[in-house]
Length: 138
Image (cartoon, rainbow, N blue to C red; front, side, top):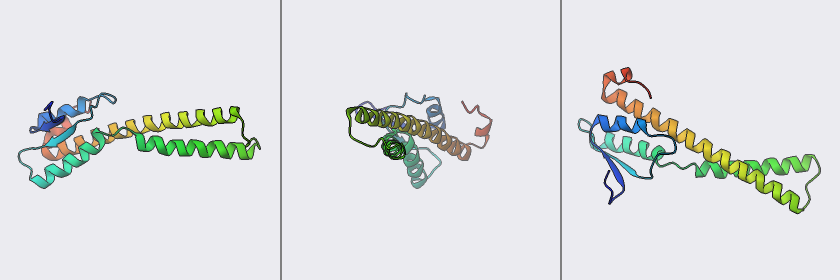
């Protein structure tokens, strides 16, 4: 990893395999640069784009979506139960709905990105090394 530019340069298959060992919340926000020998520049750039998409994902988009869903659930519940009026209590409950939605969305986004990253790396390894399927999936 180049500390000045905050990026990881992958030049060997073993370095690509080492990305499988990264834990869910232990993914630094670094740019992964793929320069694998034996692949042309377009293939390296495609793999680099796929890996960076999931390696640097934070779950913010999913968190926003789940906030909207939670607010929708709050208003539907209030409309059905006829408790849809202004009060500090209802404002607090709406805030808790939003907080729960943001948390659930953030966790969902992190898990989704983690498993998609691992799947992308495994697919790349299976194309680069035919015996890659014999390695443990970790």
